[in-house]
Image 1 (cartoon, rainbow, N blue to C red):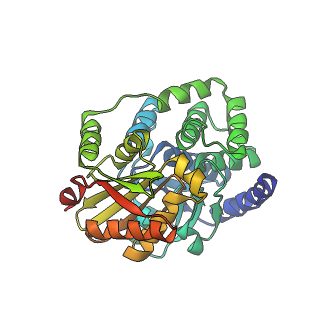
Image 2 (cartoon, rainbow, N blue to C red):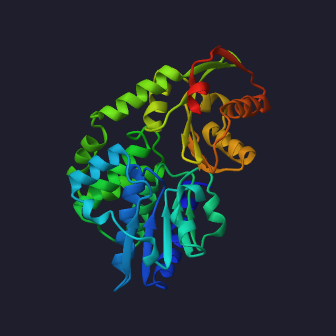
Length: 353
């Protein structure tokens, strides 16, 4: 679908979504676990839309497992902490933003069969199938830009705090515009016309290099445990096992030279698997490698997951055998005509369980 066709569809879906809001008296806004700035900005943005258009509506936000490090810093600097706490039982409609699978949104299970809508930009979105309204655009660079463009369509003007937050969300998910799409720049144009100085402020908040001790330890553990493999002598695969800060661990492995990085994260009666892929392997194979691999693992392991071409994750409701994950990874690449060979086994299998 072309950019212009996407915009026409977004106009139609925006009005459909706002008409849906008007049918409910209490709405909860939620997103994926460990919410990043794009998820946080999207929640506050669509909450602003609902409150601007529907009088006497009750709104609340739910962040399952809280915010990630960058989001926490941004929210604190903007003075938005007081708006973070809510209860799922108080809403009759759930708005799921920047989330692609049911496992990422626990409130849907807590709330039973409650109505929900979706706003998202991931490659695939299993939540869309049963949503009342699905604003799902895989060609967008971030969910924040979708929410911003909805504001433009509705002629809504957020205050400077929300403008800064939305720009931060866009910058974060587009990797400071390196993954920007045409819709990204249109959204930024709208926001910077409202507040030109907010762009610089958002940049400073997203690009801060401050890292706490626990994250540094998690990254070092992840690297020290990593196993290294070659994918048909063309690409490098890194596998590791960590219990926290998976995104930072995988980012470090990719920037250190891995083309595909996989982290298995065992939790209490649960396993999470995260995948990151370099632009090199995405461009060479011409497929959304991270989301395709996660989709394959989710189907084989009976889990729920999704994501982008370069970043994806899944959740399993049991403790998986790490060697079985490795077997399925080899099988996935074999289906692409690629062979996975050992360079260095590492300690990740022994550390996983």
